[in-house]
Image (cartoon, rainbow, N blue to C red; front, side, top):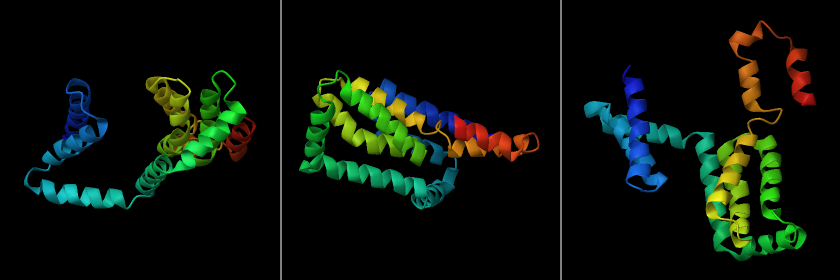
Length: 186
């Protein structure tokens, strides 16, 4: 039961910090981490350190950090500007070209990666600056990239689909052909 209260406190602290105090989401996540850690009482520092160390050893954490690092490198070097110039030469005259490109790239990358954060970081690092340079608002740019990241978990052969279809509740009800053929022909 304590885990449910910790989750609710985590969500409430993030919403309060971000929406009410108007602070950035990174700070809100750190505050949420501290709030959840407080549920461990006197052992909070120990559990928080172990949680931090364990999370830093996860592949998803590495992938997210690597994509963010590469996005930072692209933004600080002339490579991104040159890439945007090349993309503009192909699709810049098309109304909504950067948005269409972001959508297609998000779908293609998502079909391979199936991780929303990776799709957002990889595609967004190029298309968000391009969209903003083309006059698209920052809010719309972020919405498009975030929405495209959601496509990654829906494209076959999605890891999420295999997890859901392979769960113990479905296993006895479906044969392999009932799973693979619909995913491949979608």
